[in-house]
Image (tube, helix red, strand yellow):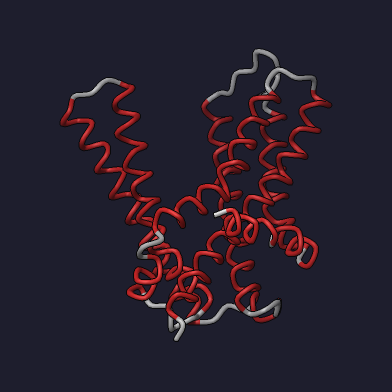
Length: 244
């Protein structure tokens, strides 16, 4: 697994150097959210965020998610097309159809698994702790099952017609846990550090908060590229196993 993680992490800086404007998209979206958070006093000592302010923060958060996805999409296509940035940035009908299918499966699967967890919690009449566990556990299960689908997702987004759903599952079979470990290992450290930086900024002097948020915005940009790199590595591994 160490070799796979090294491959995933090794793509980040070269991509950022080659495509700085793409890497800047999630950086800018994250920093814009932090500007809003600082302005509403979220990190100030004793700061309280009102309902309207929380809605504003969530709106910036939605923009950030979109920015991360756009950077991820471009990175996947950039690597698939061997550094052809023009082709990577050019949408096609096949890509748009693939994108729609990816979003449908992803959203449908998440909604179904969340509903399953909530239903189990209601049936069990569980307390808050068990309810939280019954919400998180199905999401982890979905992430595990998603490992089977990721090579197919990448193929849909990069217009690779050879990597079908069946071949994606076949190419992952027998490596599910190893691939799941690669996926978790690719983003979990950066995600944990992202949340740690947020907690570290609480109650600090404003100049310190600005410095922390700059670092965090760069981390989120790296996280977007890391996710794309992890997906691409799983895709390549599945394709390599199925090669004649």
